[in-house]
Length: 117
Image (cartoon, rainbow, N blue to C red):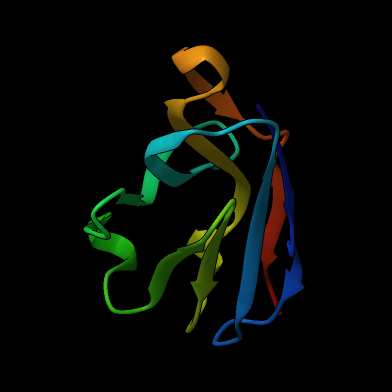
């Protein structure tokens, strides 16, 4: 399963961006879909995730500002009220069952988000 992210870019503080991640390949079911980010000099951290039941989970710094959703093979991250500390490379992650019922855990290549005036 391959993932392709899009929607990153440069935005001013207080602005919004919507990230998309499209999965290609055979997906029988998914366990979780999530977005992670990695700021310069820091470790990759979970931003938000959604499981197959629709339950969502958010990192404390983004609660109330970010929203994760999914539709079929696409997972979205709506980011509002962006702050400079949201800057980083955002990665999509999807885990589940693929062809022949084999488990997979795939990562996208990342998309840059820069929040700056």
